[in-house]
Length: 376
Image (cartoon, rainbow, N blue to C red; front, side, top):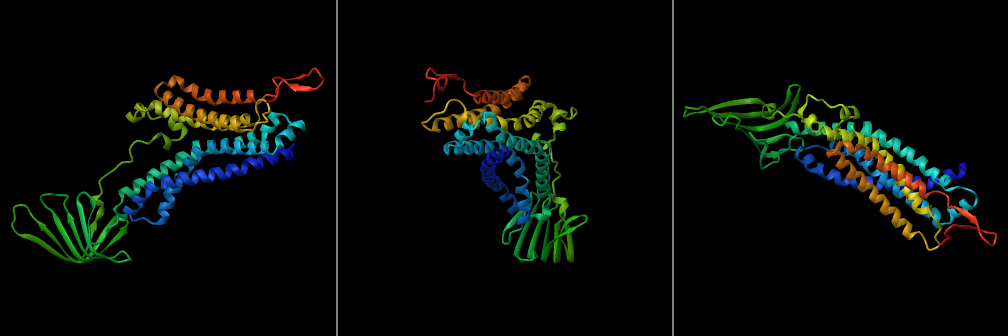
């Protein structure tokens, strides 16, 4: 039995790994495209882009793991059935529940991974992603300044650069400060560079002048300088990270939100449903895998092939996924139906286990064993 279990485990593990990597890669690629514009605008390197996109992977993996487990189980057991290996094992005395046992071991491992993602890794990566994006948006130190173009890194700051060196040094720079519409300031310099200091980002300008028109005066005030450091923090509009989304919260924050926070109070049902969803989602893994197994080996043996069984199992899996989404949406508006979120996967498991029961057999008149209803 141990050798058979290991053999079936290998038949499921490789398709599961392939499906997970493939689906995760596709979704990761589509999700990473939304970061390209931000990376370009903030003049960030490949390391920052890779870091941001990797923070998306935990939640992506949590979504695709149940689907990958279902597809891998359906593929593995259909292959075993097509090669008549399941028939040989059944004839050797293995029950259907025994044949399903290796898949349930895989289901336990996948469920453990999903609980780790949903309860800790996923929320941590989501809040880290948001904090990193907030840092990039709030920092003018990483802004990109194109040469030959009037750049507006903030609404009250305009920068023009004639030439930009690969080292980052800028030549022929013009800076227009319009924070005070009555007292605009224009600065010009031969050379400039962005410098990070302990007090924040500075634009260090060399060999230039500062021009300003005072209200009520006709003359132009000009200040010539050898070096001038412009504090870029003055142009950063104060910004807060705002309300923490449900996917960024740990389980305790979902079930026990801050009732002094108006946003938490208004979204109480949404937070509660998200907390229960994280507890329920891993239960869909054994439900989907049992549906896949029941679709292949459940019921009576059919000599005409497995086509209809595969289609039925795939359809049942899709219906179960749709039900999971629908029940969660309804529970958000009607919290009393949260219990239905648990009932759907548990009921699906019970139905699949019932379909996996051994067929009743009786003694045929001629003395042989025949299944009730007969094989098709």
